[in-house]
Image 1: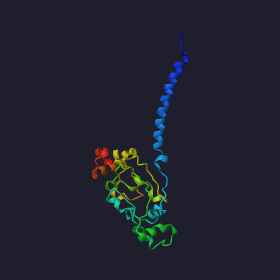
Image 2: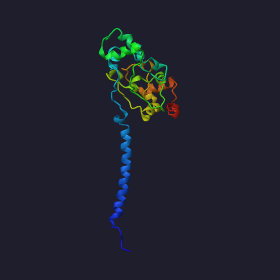
Image 3: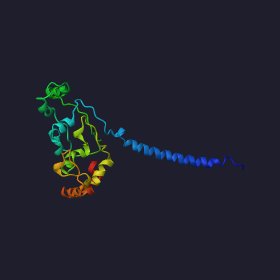
Image 4: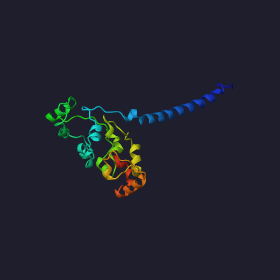
Length: 218
């Protein structure tokens, strides 16, 4: 029986299989990298707010402590945004006629809360507790980045599962003394790993439990 296909057909078939597999693998890698890119995670993208609030001005320039506005962060899962009367404790005396603060004044007069837009919006299946991280020596800027330098607040970290697990697996790389949690000028010492290991033990952090699924997914 004469040969139906040319001998080169076998080579072409093999190349087609290899090329198809390469395209599938490339597609997976490209999709994986794209899903972690700032374009998708919105890291570094400023979030529009009903009132332009500058953390740099309030925190760095005026020296207002984080807890003045986010007092619930130490004792609850949610840091929350400050109620309007907290803003008015200062702005009833200064910048009283600023057009930019008109939404704040109206909120105070009407009792209608300002609808701030979330910068960090975790999915419903992820549980995060601010208070436990503060109590265990994790600084605000570990997650929120250089918040004291932000004129417009943006997302500093992707908060991906891999990013969180890096800290949960090796908390000694990030932990600091509790009195330094709110210090945005804190610099890790040269012996961070040694100090971190000591603090992990002192604060009763059980590393073997931090990677359990139920810690974050409840």
